[in-house]
Length: 123
Image (cartoon, rainbow, N blue to C red):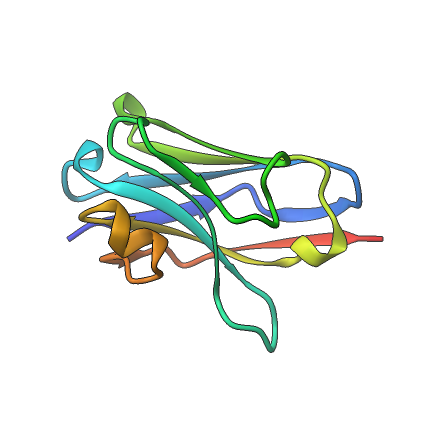
C-alpha cells in the first residue's frame, strides 16, 4: 500500500508558473516509477510526465515538453512537477501516480493514485 498526497495547485494567470508536489508514504518510494496525469472536465485522463526510480528515464507528453519538468527527491519521498508558461488548456485536476515499472505508468495503468489537485489557468 502506497499513499500519495498532492499539493501546490491553484489559480494562475496564463504565462505564469506553479510547482506541484506529491508526498508518498507506506512503502519504499524509491522503488517506484512516478508520474503525473491530468483530467479536464468532459475529457479523458491524460498522461503528463513520468520519472523512473533513479531519474534515469524521463518522459513527457508532447503538449508539455519544454514547459514542464518532473523531478524527484527520494530522500524526501517526494516527486515534483514544475509547470512554466502555463496556458488555459493546462487547466485540469492533476493526479500523482506510482507504478511498479515505467510501462504501467506511461500507459495510464499505475498501481496507485493520489486524490488530485486543481490547477486553473486564466486567460
